[in-house]
Length: 442
Image (cartoon, rainbow, N blue to C red):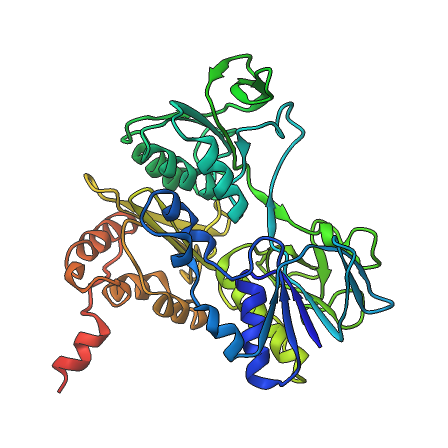
């Protein structure tokens, strides 16, 4: 019997892929919800664009058809010596193989009032329900933490005409991840949104509450009081590993795993946001908390459990998100601080929210990575360039091949290449997209 704790993208991907190769009994356990749903779609439920049922990729009959049992319960403890789970209702369950895919939890840093009413994170289905209840009829809110979840929550609240005060610890938005030029683009974009009040270099000290223990404001570390009726805590997430407390499973920040996603205990694996690699891959972090890495871990662990051990190796880093209207994608390695042996080329459109940030090696000109904002690019094309050690000149001359939107093939590329040539004294020419080259050659 294979038991999976957690029904997010990692756990469900593991279950689906195991079923393709095995007839073993598979049970997915979650205390959050019975059915798998898309977390990134929760904001659209709040905004009225869809119902919660619309966030579920699979119809209820899918699980029965694929013989995947679903159990909504809370795992209290794991006894690996007995291969047994204990639930909060006192019941027990045996397993042969166990996959822990419990995801993340919002960070809290011991702020006074952080557990009060009308103070919530934005991660789970329960968070969405609490936010819906706490923000009805309110006039203003404070969001703590300058990351992607905070942006989503701000967009949600603004759609209901709630004034939003956004507290960001650093002097730029997401500046621990984005280079200063990229962060500035987002900061300029945020200033355009009515009702959004950005407070940089500002940290939360405490949440002020009334006699009913409801949030009525915050006090910053500088001593400023901001009145509000809701506080959103979005200062990042950390691995949710409460399920292994008291067990013999080794952990650090996350549940420690090897490259095959095996924990310190036999027949127990950890995948997704809750897993931490003992030896990270070169250039990768020990904890990788994005959708595609969680999905890939589910695929990898399914191979190992069904008798074909496979190491985790997801290739070059990529991610995508949205900052209100600006789409963001990153491929390869673009760091907040440029490495000494790297060079950068940044193109920013004069009037539109479009920015391309290229990084390459100084000596060899080997392409290292790109952050792109306001233009959708094709992941397979950039992945191919990274795998084949393309130079920055090769990337720029064939940039049209990576542009996702055919109607924009001639809109930016010539200007991008012209700026690069002027800055670096190069003579890069703009080639036609590869698909067009194939057509005109016949």
